[in-house]
Image 1 (cartoon, rainbow, N blue to C red):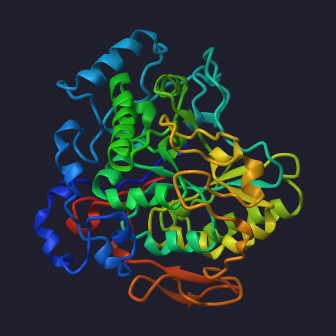
Image 2 (cartoon, rainbow, N blue to C red):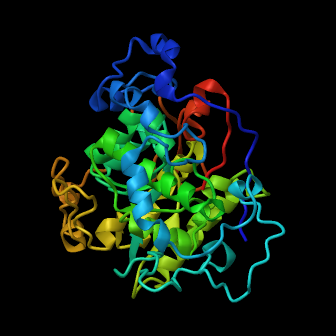
Length: 429
């Protein structure tokens, strides 16, 4: 089993409720996505701001960063849950809370036959409960990398998103509901830039440790928060730490969510933990690149787990981007790789087909049409040490080889709330 490491947590108020911090960012316009995306100082990016649509709806959502439960006065959520609860597979939650919430399943007796298709146990991705489709762990298109990032939106991600935009690179962003609540304008940027948005739960706990009602709430309220803030309802999700079994898959499927896993793990989220070094992460990237170069993915592509979590993880993505682009024929969002042109419940936004994307049409609707044939390389780091974005947000320093490392604001080092309140430090995957 793969277990996580969590530091001490304490109750944290949502960013939008901390009005006292707004004055320190008074020089910045914190009212629109466009203005927020233009902030070039990482510290300013991570100052809390007041966003009325979220603040006015705050009491319609669970406590920020705490395991979600269905609110007693939420008639819509209760009605939806009651309509499916009797059909949920009779699989018990794994472990004992609170330890199991953080991935401690010690003392659990579980059959070696893996009856629940528990990914944490043996990386099972083909459900054993009838009617459930296999997880998306790779992509069918040859020489293709399903490109995406977990744990966003990170408050200091502007330099990283600028880099992706400069390279006309779209990705799938797996957003945590609590982060969307805290950084709504940052979440909006993903859709504006043409990225695909999927759910990464409300509080980033091990999902198989949760009760049926908690698991439902983790997904349901994340979907509702993304709809409130961004205006779309995702149809895909990724379980934190990959922790999913057929009970959780069934609940996600009942909410219209496709489960997406991975085949390779960069372990970027784990650098500095359990003996994992920065060099280990570099090696994981290079191993994937070597496999792509030697033809491993000549018949079908793959997915590697990477993160928007902090300075290091975003810098690694930039550092290895050109090499990934060279090793794989195509880097595309998960929905594009899967030819899912309708990524949301709403019908006013579409993704291009795989063929259209690789032919140059990276955005169909919901953003400015762009073409890969434009040849934009202003964000490229290959053979140079030029910095990304504007002054104040990032600097560069030489790294091994000819690729530079982008240094993002330390204020955004961990996804969301602890940046200014200091109440919680989390290690996410």
